[in-house]
Length: 201
Image 1 (cartoon, rainbow, N blue to C red):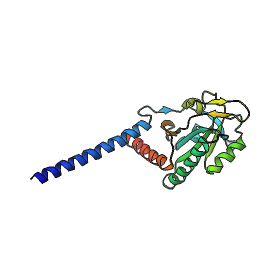
Image 2 (image 1 turned 45 degrees about the vertical axis):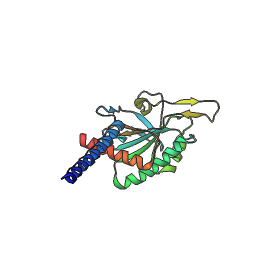
Image 3 (image 1 turned 90 degrees about the horizontal axis):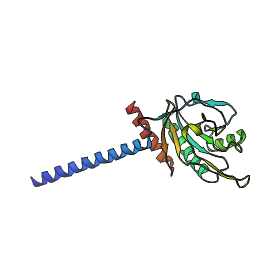
Image 4 (image 1 turned 90 degrees about the vertical axis):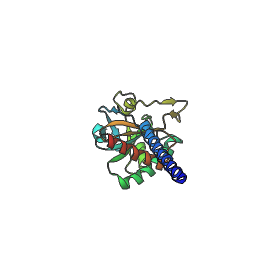
């Protein structure tokens, strides 16, 4: 009888622990997601790395990973882009409607050719965007990206965030994925966020 009571207590503790872990997991997803009021993106117009017009219609109906940086970045950008390339390659096996977009915060130096070479180096499907960083309708302004030019010479550095932003198919700023970034971490975050959103729509 004592054994049965102990066994029942142990089973109860195990179930309680599993439920607690599941709640913690869900809470982590909620923390990553701007929910229940994700920001709806407004229309914008810019140019991609091929010199073609790019706007809100190019985001509609797709999950979009956005990263803001510049091609002369010595560390954060190439590291993050490499991680995103690995995550993109693995996610593309399972999902179709998603894309990775690199938006420059240094359009003065990041010409169309520079952007094209840069994003294509990491993955031929990656998209590079430029434009007027001070334009109120730009993605930089809409998402609220802070950046700072350390202009001591022509090889100046630009301070910028290292987070990855996630836009859902309804063109809403849904989540911010904070560093440090690992490809499997990004994959897991995306799957959990997508599942969370699907269940709440």
